[in-house]
Length: 88
Image 1 (cartoon, one colour):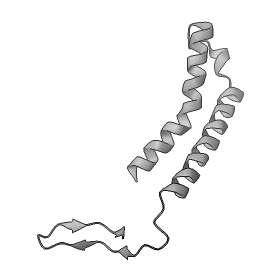
Image 2 (image 1 turned 120 degrees about the vertical axis):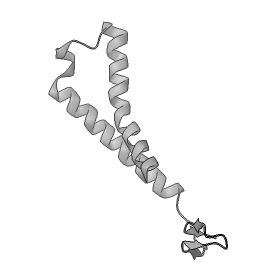
Image 3 (image 1 turned 180 degrees about the horizontal axis):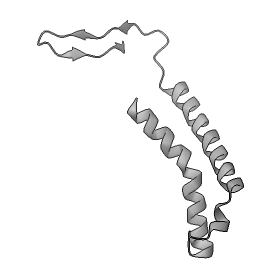
Image 4 (image 1 turned 90 degrees about the vertical axis):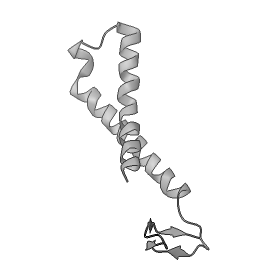
């Protein structure tokens, strides 16, 4: 679960990183407050949300269980170790 949240956070922040890189290349600095207006931040957040949504859809599409698989619930093995639930 933590991996999914980390991936989502990274993909949400990509538009901000690209914009910051653009500002550094074109203006040489990130400190100009006029470059970080609320409208710009809102557009970057919307772009990040769309990108994050697309990534979530891709994860759902390609990380699913096999259609004909059988679910094996979590259980203990002979040595007392927990075996997580999985599909076979």
